[in-house]
Length: 157
Image (tube, rainbow, N blue to C red):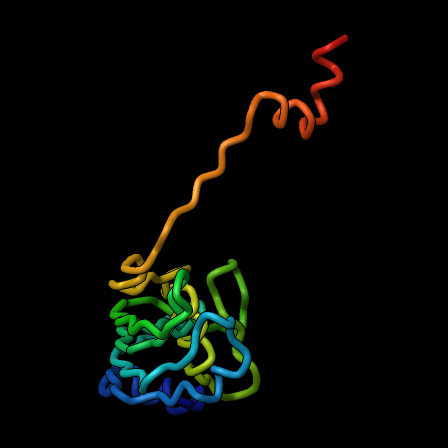
């Protein structure tokens, strides 16, 4: 969703809530290999304008469904995300949490996608990933351990 700074200043006291659906397919090309697909992203929230700091503060709730690859079987697993976050924008950058305003518009889509990438789990495991899992254990004898150990020569001296 894209707004001009003029629109945001005009509506910050009366009409400061928003709801829209974001299409994440544009961002999927540049993501990790474990993220296969993402459904429509529901974005709800509100904003306010801090005139003294020339800062726009967005309180956003994001709901989306992702498909990620299972860490064991590499089959797609559905992951539901539902989280809230705060996005700050300003022409004056005072800290690491404030995003710069480029030009006269604020486009939330790229920032919301970045928040989704932060909130997604690092890895997922499908419920049936361990159904056909067989663990193999290998035991080494004392001589095999000593032959492959680079510190074995130090111990003999």
